[in-house]
Image (tube, rainbow over all chains, first blue to last red; front, side, top):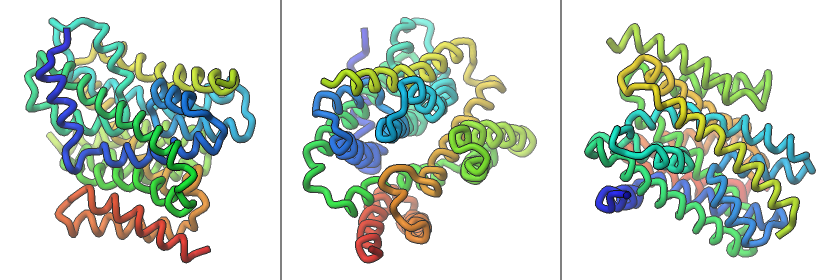
Length: 234
Length: 108
């Protein structure tokens, strides 16, 4: 059903020395501590990372609960912040497609789409036989997902021992890692302009609408970058 | 488990899975070399960059308690460390946490 060799390859890939798993782990330790301080018990904290597995979404949920937002408001706020997962999924699934593979693998494994697993796949997929790329992806997803769950547990129990400064330190790890990783993938004019324009437009759009800033900033920046790339990269 | 918390978790995970699932459905008809794929790829990278810079410039949660000057110092130092260490991702990441925690403990 799942090719074990490629599945394990995916798991191993996620454990490289400079893997995004470090950033993932640190940020979910912070989430575990945050959920505990919010009044979640250990089962609920595990359940949350198990089902959601998306850092900004969990942060938004936590903040909405603090201010006593309704379920509808939580849904909308989370949907807006996590809608970035839509273009992210579209930009990796065609790389994993193979006619011999059943569709359920794609529908289930899309749950693993998150920044860290996405970056691991993007930098490794070319070396993998096309037929088994989906199994490789399921391996990456399983590994990163388990790291997130394990780190949530760790953060939950470490919450009492972590000082405010340490939690702040953990919270910056995630954006700094991905900022450097993004600078690292700026290899073509198209990707460089996508990343630089996105980094500027996201915060600029924040002044007009905090909720829509990431989505609109990404959409406008990505479209401009696409046309820049069409003109200069070819 | 508290009913409210469980409901909030279910709502959050549903709101998250929708985008992933729609992405999987949409991509069924998209080829790796098509123009629309390239566009989606650009939008994915831009959206991520927008999210990361928003997290650093207008943070939520614990990071929002840190003065923006401190955050800017950490961002610039991390980029410097990234280049000095020949694009190593581990050093800037770990050092950023230590630098920020240290600076912040002096700031208050």
